[in-house]
Length: 519
Image (cartoon, rainbow, N blue to C red; front, side):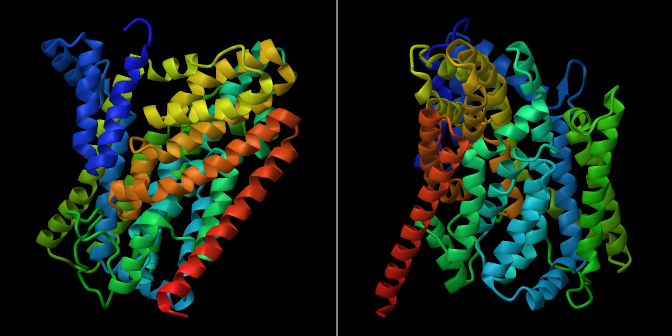
């Protein structure tokens, strides 16, 4: 397809509609992929099959060599699955759960610990989603917190916090793009200065982080989330029992009474420390002039995750081997770890395939092209926010949305009002995070489900209402920013609406609880 048309929206919209209607992710993604391939090949069957094979094969091998991104992410998932299974097999998960239970005595406390840990692990969203979920699960399971709630907390402290941190893979990538945009339009500030100036304008990321804190503290469980939480508290069922399979299910502990906290802490610490070290090291190796931003811009995240995963796995294996298990037990444990990650890998592979199809259909470019140059500048922050959200939601990639829409936003600002450059750019970044947060085909959404051990569709359905509410308050914030040109006014509007909404939900839920209990 030379020029993108409205038909480019068909594959993502069809896949998303089927996911919502059927609650079955794999067949829905598969349908979108097939329709997209047929569109690209004028409905010819054989060329479509060949293209689908090429896209699938490119996940593993590209240009005659191993794919050092998608394939490495799959390898990291497998390593993490085996490591988590080893930790459970050795009794480390149970020991850590018992230790944490004595110190974190409430459900609210367990959720806050997870939330704080997620904020601290800001270096990369993949790393955040998987590590925070795996570490927190023994604690939240003991406090009967549903896996859907855990996935929401993990996801809300992944992309939203990474996009606010200049010393993260996200921050470095955005700063690189901003450098080009500010230089092209003669703006006398570096990409780093622009990034820091735009932080208070990222209304969605800031509100998503604040709101998840209020959801935890004020127990704002609504819709499907309320159902999951009530099932967990009343019936001790952390997952929907009607769904087949338990994501992240591990083998029974080898010796539950002799497991120690170090059986969990040491492998996780080894994983985190070695991964961070390797990210810095690979970044330094790839740049000529070493600066903090340049290092994180060029770091090899996938390779660092795989090597860090190997280090964590070796440590967990050594701790498990010290208990002298049978070779059969070790083999079964390793296979259980691999098997626990297969559902996430299947979803990721299909998500990558549909993202590739959508990219060739130029869906993002079509949506971006709908922006009318005659629209007054005061409305554009809100409109760019919505447009970026739609692109990221439809394509499953916030980074792709940055690449497509940030230069367009820069051009619009240069033509209409260069003083609005930073508000326009910040609205694109915020919208991309919104779309990434909501999309069932987003890597971060999928990996948050995996790390938390939640069914993917349960995570998507339970998180969506919260994301939409924060999208609404952020949209009004961007409207105020556009009309006033004041970051403070836009941010204040966003936070006031957020607090009013949270108070309304709190009072409504308390009244509902009083009605149900007859008090």
